[in-house]
Length: 141
Image 1 (cartoon, rainbow, N blue to C red):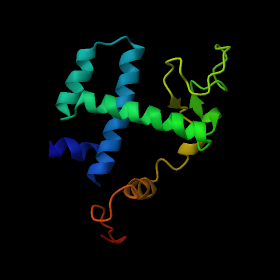
Image 2 (cartoon, helix red, strand yellow):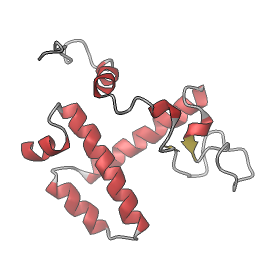
Image 3 (cartoon, helix red, strand yellow):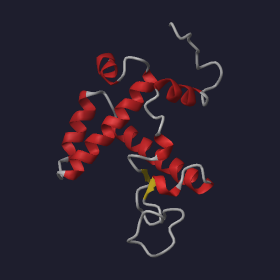
């Protein structure tokens, strides 16, 4: 399991989880594009000591957060797939995405301009940790 985690990111468990989630998203997209079998996803998860149920739960939380951040104006509607602004096929107002369209960010969303900055991502994630969980390391550690 440790070797599998290290393949995703040798930096930290948090970055490994994020990298594993991104890999899951890519595999899910590829599998859906070629109408692949669900067993491929199950095998990938087993090979990497991951839980598909947990990854799907992350999807759900991510979608809820995007919906709320969009509603509050922190994520521009132009960055969201499935929003009324970008979805010309739907004629009804779609502010809260209640039609079952998955709420996702566009691949070039402006809010993701610093997504590859590992130090920033780690710092943002750590702000949600209780004070006794996160440990700050120096730049040379």
